[in-house]
Length: 234
Picture 1 (cartoon, rainbow, N blue to C red):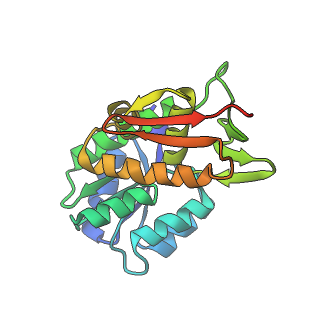
Picture 2: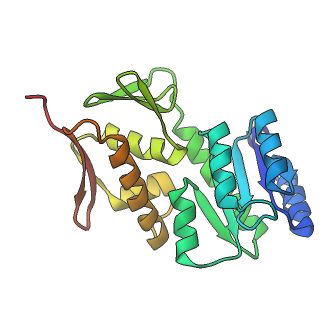
């Protein structure tokens, strides 16, 4: 149910922060509002949240740096960026750091709620249920769907929520093509230019994570999509 979802909102603008926290509260979310990065980190350390909504421009630390510090505390916490900047490089930087979405200011409160509902619904649907596969073997790697992690021998590799979702989809369809449309609509909820660029960034991340087993490759099928290919051991 929506009222079980706990959000942390990080916004230094007092008027906007108050407006968004009150509006989200009216829509059934439990909202903890932090006015700067220091306060946000204290709250993340002390509480469990389902989603973080981060302003990019903060007085003590930019939202990009804050997102990385939050991930070091809770690697699985998804986050949305709020930004007044519309440069492609800023948007792509947000996605490359693991953001699940972004909204440009001025914020449309109704759109924000719709985006949050869609994201939390999708993220909930990707949680492993009873009877589902608890792990996937990818060459010498194991993708653990209970711990949301990737293991290589005795090493555990931390994955962002987006990396985990993407690798899970590729693993389910191992040695088969996953089209751009299928990936983007499943993982990003939207097939557009920015998300396609973000997809390429995350594919690059996964290739690095899987780089210790030469039998594994993520193949770019020109203009069609990607395939997680694992060659048989010789």
